[in-house]
Length: 333
Ligand SMILES: *[C@@H]1O[C@H](CO)[C@@H](O)[C@H](O)[C@H]1NC(C)=O
Ligand SMILES: *[C@@H]1O[C@H](CO)[C@@H](O)[C@H](O)[C@H]1NC(C)=O
Ligand SMILES: *[C@@H]1O[C@H](CO)[C@@H](O)[C@H](O)[C@H]1NC(C)=O
Ligand SMILES: *[C@@H]1O[C@H](CO)[C@@H](O)[C@H](O)[C@H]1NC(C)=O
Ligand SMILES: *[C@@H]1O[C@H](CO)[C@@H](O)[C@H](O)[C@H]1NC(C)=O
Image (cartoon, rainbow, N blue to C red; front, side):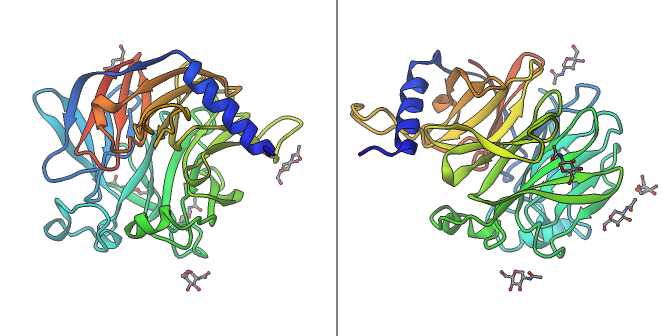
């Protein structure tokens, strides 16, 4: 007998494969300074500059243009040693002192860049770059171990961020993915009061977060559970959560576009049962505020079988980020 979850999943798989889908055309690879890797997320400043990307050696780089490429903008560790840290790869224990920025988001009113750092928690960087303030550190009851996804409400400046796990750190990434861990959480930081609140607990590796255009709800992806949950922030359902959508793969970052829709990066897409081979390719999935799938774009040409961690639409252009690649991408659907 089919249980309800299986029916829902099967329906969504069929729906996914019936939606308008295409293979992305790679327009440009934005190469990080070697040997740095892992532009896991991207952000743009209030003047349209960027993309800014997070990286494996603890630095945040800003893309200047085709001639100058990426230039160092800031870092998250309060005592970062350039000699030890510059060029450091991912999943090293040394990242605990060098920092590992993952989620990025600007407050366009203040120009501050907020960062979810896997070792330093929630960090703020001043508009000039360089000035680092740790806002919610990992010492606070373990709650910010392995901070991961981040979004800033453009109207209120409230920061939503995730803690992927309190049991595992980024260096234990492979173990975490096979663990069935559900110690993750979704948190809210209000800069006007300096207060941090937990919105949702017991999440299975919450990797991405995005607030809705009107600030009435926030979405959080659970990488190990193949689903996105919605937490209502305003209105009659405020403070309650519900299933937003189930995806046919591992959902990572979620990014809102200017029309209020969301791009979800989905990895290890499982093909329909009669497909000769299971595809494990990354894709970008665009959904409405109601979770309706509008478009699926395969990122196989950009990332092969490596996971993509983010798809972001900015100025009508699509950008891609990945924890494993040494470049960010610009592509057309
Ligand atoms: C986005 O568009 C604005 C306005 O046209 C422009 O100033 C800015 O440079 C653009 N940014 C990027 C990254 O394309
Ligand atoms: C760094 O931030 C602190 C606190 O916001 C501020 O007082 C200080 O002037 C800033 N320093 C620089 C160099 O911008
Ligand atoms: C906010 O919290 C941080 C970390 O605990 C602290 O350093 C800072 O002084 C606080 N700021 C305000 C305005 O309370
Ligand atoms: C933090 O986590 C570690 C490892 O899981 C545990 O040993 C320690 O007791 C925790 N500390 C607090 C304050 O919960
Ligand atoms: C939601 O929680 C906040 C803070 O606890 C409270 O002020 C508000 O009244 C709650 N809203 C609803 C609709 O329950």
